[in-house]
Length: 206
Image: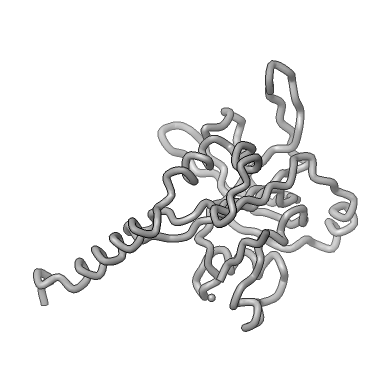
């Protein structure tokens, strides 16, 4: 299975602390066409990381569990010049994409790979949210440690182009909901037609 990028309903965990963190990629989930900026349909992919040095405790099926904190980021599945995914991947790799790679780079190759992520905090309605502000390559001091790390969560690869029901059921509820609500081809075509009509409306003043 490949996921090519081209040219919560979860628990109330405390937010991941702000700052840089050593991390491992444990999920790459292509969730299909979603309504993006200004209503434009965009193919979206969610990339999730675990942070071995930040531990959390929770219950699953009534049993106490301790494990690494997790955090993820939603991207437009694109390697266009201004795409956030391209910027973060080039920073992670430490080199620019070649013209050949820009024709189609399989981002499922990220699974299990170590990196460094930057986390920032935003506050809304009195609640603090942690967000990934960037992804970077490892420092020289981190490479030895990273070579010994083993993911503590299952590595999850998912794409709407070839839905594996078992993998689908392992996704967080909020991601399954986004997958179920994804835009179909007819909806995408209608939205694009409407945008063209809006852009060339006779009512636009000059």
